[in-house]
Image 1 (tube, helix red, strand yellow):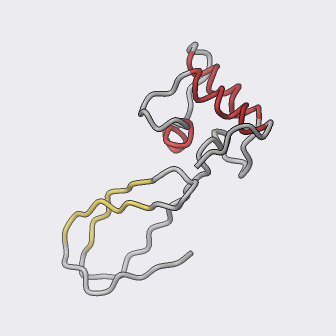
Image 2 (cartoon, rainbow, N blue to C red):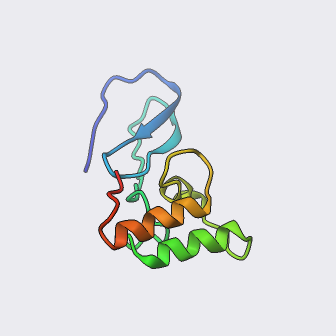
Image 3 (cartoon, rainbow, N blue to C red):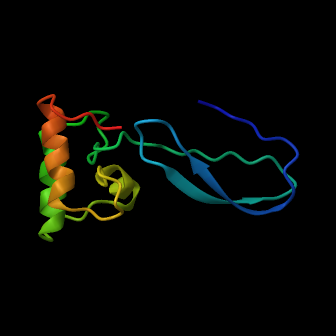
Length: 107
Protein backbone atom coordinates (compact mmCIF):
# COMPACT_ATOMS: atom_id res chain seq x y z
CA UNK A 1 0.00 0.00 0.00
CA UNK A 2 1.06 3.56 -0.48
CA UNK A 3 0.29 6.39 1.92
CA UNK A 4 0.98 10.11 1.93
CA UNK A 5 1.17 12.35 4.98
CA UNK A 6 1.14 15.99 3.89
CA UNK A 7 2.28 19.06 5.84
CA UNK A 8 4.53 17.32 8.36
CA UNK A 9 6.88 19.70 10.17
CA UNK A 10 10.61 19.07 9.78
CA UNK A 11 12.03 16.81 12.48
CA UNK A 12 12.73 13.23 13.42
CA UNK A 13 9.79 10.88 13.88
CA UNK A 14 9.24 7.22 14.63
CA UNK A 15 6.93 5.65 12.06
CA UNK A 16 5.04 2.57 13.20
CA UNK A 17 3.37 0.28 10.65
CA UNK A 18 0.77 -2.20 11.88
CA UNK A 19 -1.60 -4.67 10.25
CA UNK A 20 -3.64 -7.39 11.90
CA UNK A 21 -1.79 -10.72 11.81
CA UNK A 22 1.51 -9.04 10.93
CA UNK A 23 4.49 -8.07 13.06
CA UNK A 24 4.63 -4.36 13.83
CA UNK A 25 7.52 -2.55 12.17
CA UNK A 26 9.01 0.75 13.29
CA UNK A 27 11.43 3.06 11.55
CA UNK A 28 12.97 6.39 12.47
CA UNK A 29 12.31 8.93 9.73
CA UNK A 30 13.83 12.39 9.37
CA UNK A 31 11.54 14.85 7.63
CA UNK A 32 12.97 17.90 5.85
CA UNK A 33 11.49 20.40 3.43
CA UNK A 34 11.57 17.91 0.53
CA UNK A 35 9.38 14.90 -0.23
CA UNK A 36 10.70 11.63 1.12
CA UNK A 37 9.77 8.04 0.41
CA UNK A 38 10.20 5.22 2.92
CA UNK A 39 9.64 1.57 2.09
CA UNK A 40 8.75 -0.74 4.95
CA UNK A 41 8.09 -4.45 4.70
CA UNK A 42 5.92 -6.13 7.31
CA UNK A 43 5.82 -9.88 7.86
CA UNK A 44 3.14 -12.28 9.02
CA UNK A 45 3.52 -13.15 12.67
CA UNK A 46 5.26 -16.54 12.52
CA UNK A 47 6.86 -16.00 9.10
CA UNK A 48 10.50 -16.06 10.23
CA UNK A 49 12.05 -16.81 6.84
CA UNK A 50 10.09 -14.07 5.04
CA UNK A 51 8.62 -16.27 2.31
CA UNK A 52 5.03 -15.14 2.96
CA UNK A 53 3.95 -18.44 4.57
CA UNK A 54 3.98 -19.87 8.07
CA UNK A 55 5.52 -23.34 7.95
CA UNK A 56 7.40 -25.86 10.08
CA UNK A 57 10.61 -24.32 8.71
CA UNK A 58 9.79 -21.13 10.62
CA UNK A 59 9.47 -23.17 13.83
CA UNK A 60 12.79 -24.86 13.07
CA UNK A 61 14.53 -21.50 12.65
CA UNK A 62 13.16 -20.32 16.00
CA UNK A 63 14.43 -23.46 17.74
CA UNK A 64 17.84 -23.04 16.11
CA UNK A 65 17.85 -19.41 17.26
CA UNK A 66 17.05 -20.52 20.81
CA UNK A 67 20.08 -22.83 20.96
CA UNK A 68 22.40 -20.33 19.28
CA UNK A 69 22.98 -22.12 15.97
CA UNK A 70 21.03 -19.56 13.91
CA UNK A 71 20.46 -15.83 14.34
CA UNK A 72 17.07 -14.52 13.33
CA UNK A 73 17.58 -11.28 11.39
CA UNK A 74 16.45 -8.03 12.95
CA UNK A 75 13.68 -7.63 10.36
CA UNK A 76 12.10 -10.92 11.51
CA UNK A 77 12.46 -10.71 15.30
CA UNK A 78 8.95 -9.32 15.78
CA UNK A 79 7.54 -11.98 13.46
CA UNK A 80 9.26 -14.69 15.52
CA UNK A 81 7.64 -13.51 18.76
CA UNK A 82 4.40 -15.40 18.13
CA UNK A 83 3.14 -15.28 21.72
CA UNK A 84 3.91 -11.55 22.00
CA UNK A 85 5.95 -11.73 25.20
CA UNK A 86 8.99 -9.98 23.64
CA UNK A 87 11.16 -13.10 24.01
CA UNK A 88 11.88 -15.71 21.36
CA UNK A 89 11.47 -19.16 22.93
CA UNK A 90 10.54 -22.73 22.06
CA UNK A 91 6.94 -21.78 22.87
CA UNK A 92 6.89 -19.56 19.77
CA UNK A 93 8.03 -22.53 17.68
CA UNK A 94 5.38 -24.73 19.31
CA UNK A 95 2.64 -22.23 18.44
CA UNK A 96 3.79 -22.18 14.80
CA UNK A 97 3.65 -25.98 14.63
CA UNK A 98 0.18 -25.94 16.19
CA UNK A 99 -0.84 -23.36 13.59
CA UNK A 100 0.51 -25.61 10.81
CA UNK A 101 -1.78 -28.47 11.88
CA UNK A 102 -4.79 -26.20 12.42
CA UNK A 103 -5.04 -26.29 16.19
CA UNK A 104 -3.90 -22.68 16.82
CA UNK A 105 -4.67 -19.43 15.03
CA UNK A 106 -1.89 -16.87 14.91
CA UNK A 107 -3.24 -13.33 15.22
